Image (cartoon, rainbow, N blue to C red; front, side, top):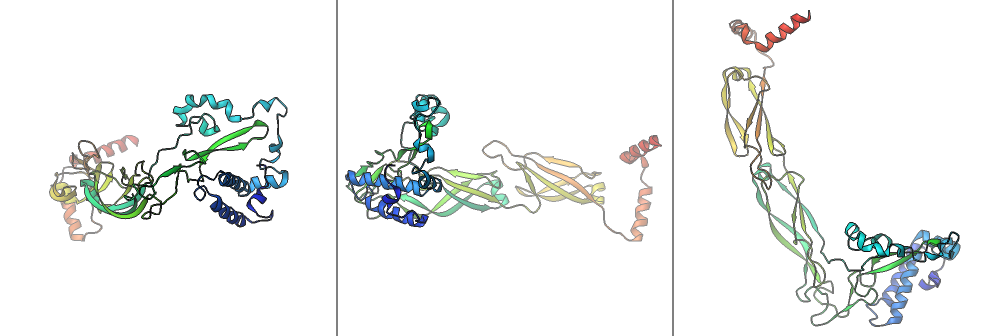
Length: 387
């Protein structure tokens, strides 16, 4: 910048950051292209003010300017320098021819997105903001699927101006500062290495690429207004805690006559079950039974996705026995079939019984053939071989 940035903003060298910001806002508002349509002198002044603020709002650049008279420090005085670097007046030009090669790797602007060269300068697609919210559902609602109604506020396109922000029948001008691109090239000196270009949002039009002369009275030129909506969301069977439902085009509307709305992102919180434990699409149940039920067998009720169902405990069931009930688990999300309900038997021994029952059990145990204790006998044989 050729002019003194302090003089451009009308502040002293000892001005605080807040004083610099206040001076910039006042001048930017005065010379903004929206306030001076077609005024080239005001446009030039606006660019000058923005450049001055860029220097003085950055502590490093301001320090360099105060010490060396250049925001780039001593590098701002560099020319060719030793080593023949004078040929690199524009550092990005060495890569400008590679933009198309790297386009598929680094996006639309190719390598120019990193070095400022080779970019096509296209305006990005206009898209509204996403809206995020959470819902709470029960364990069974997650397993079986459900419908929930959510209430939220979003920006919806103004019908009076069709989202343009301009009063009906009036024109929207192309921003003369960025030529309707929504972004501008910003140069940064690299000392002896020349200049690097970056693409930054246009401050004159807030990156929209357009300037409104006569604003719509209903939306005040925004092109959209807040509205509270009730939206019915179908929660699919099998959804898990923490998963997110993505509903396209139900977020904020895009500003302008063209563009797409953002998405509605719904985080799902699933309550736990008092007995069943979910592991992906399988359900696990630890079933406690008495030692008499383990010996004689029994029929009991157990919980499942379908409600309470009958479960048969076979006679002579051992502790730790696992029964797998096929297809009684969670429905597979967006897939065919369901997981299993896995029942693990836990044989519970009473903590205490009276002496009469103790003697009775000893009598019963004496009547049992010792050969029926197969695991105990195998253990005893191994112990004998160790002695």
